[in-house]
Amino acid sequence: MAWLKTSDTSANHPIALAALEFEDADDRLLNELWGFAARCAVMSAQHEQDYVVTIGTARAVAGSIARYQVLSAAAVRAGYFTHVEVEAEDGSARPAFKLVEDEDLFHMILKDERAWTNQRKRDTGNASLTVPIRLRDGDACRWCGQVVVWSGDRKSARAGTYDHLTPGEGARTPADMVVACKGCNSARADEENTWDKQLMSPPENPYYSKASVTWLAKYGKSVKATERRRQYTPAPAAATGKHASVETQAVETPTVENPSRERPQGAAPAAGAPVAGAPARAPEEAPSSAVETCASEDLPAPADQRYPESGFVGSGRDGLGRAGTGQAGTALAGPGRDGSRAGSPLAGARKKRRGKRGGKR
View 1 (cartoon, rainbow, N blue to C red):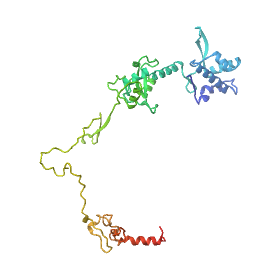
View 2: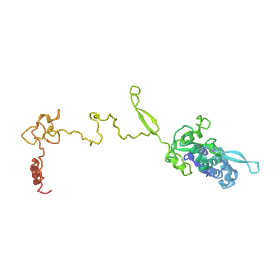
View 3: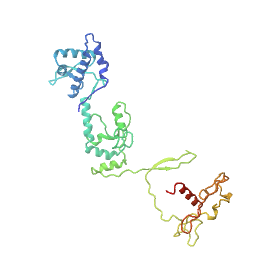
View 4: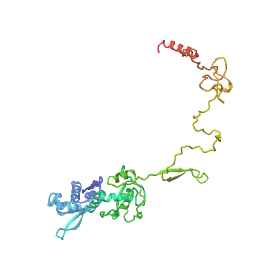
């Protein structure tokens, strides 16, 4: 599709403002001349004439022969047009105008560029080319070796593309194209004369992502996804002072059913070793006598129940008072025979609080 880009600063471009410098300029010449040149550019792009404006086009846009003579002469003086000769259908030369090629004024896609863009789209959509290329190269760029992605953000430098080895020519076989990241593909197009990276040979074991495995399967090509696992192996502390990262292939670890070592028949197991068939032993609990409950307000808490350098008494669960403050612990008494806590020192306090609230909860 042909297109023309007009810059948002084109109306104030020096070429446009040059119309005000003419001695014979009137109040309408600035805008009229800009509109005349812009319409000529649109028609040149529409008919893929590569910035060429024929005499017939210029006269049709001007509206009259008299106005054409004024505007075409002013366009040449300002710098919009230059006089050129083009080849006619019969092979003869005929006069024409050539628009200035300036991206800040008017910019159009050339005929060859448009044809090359369409050819690339046809090649990258041709499964007879892309499937063998993807099967051969996998998901790694043949210029830099970086793994590419085929879905998601297509503007990223890691986006997967197909690069033509001979720009400007269509691919005849898969050998004419390679997998490339968008970063290398774009840089190679922009720096065609200075591109110095060497093309890598096709990989012996291509890297296939799960997306590529699924995509190739649609065309009857069965490959396995490449599985990699990052394994961290401690390096000698004296050498690096930190752990080194080592990337290895996934390793299958055998399962050991009985990890205990074999021992001579009749020999006693080692101390602390588990005995087959014996129930698991829970960690030993401290004797109940190790913690005493201070249930009486008249007796101070034993010294051995205080945390070192702390004013709190007991284990934090049984005693609720503070040492040396006159506030004795208010440990809960055990439940009565009927299951209630009538014997608890807190029972009276709860009744008093309920009475203050009017006896309602």
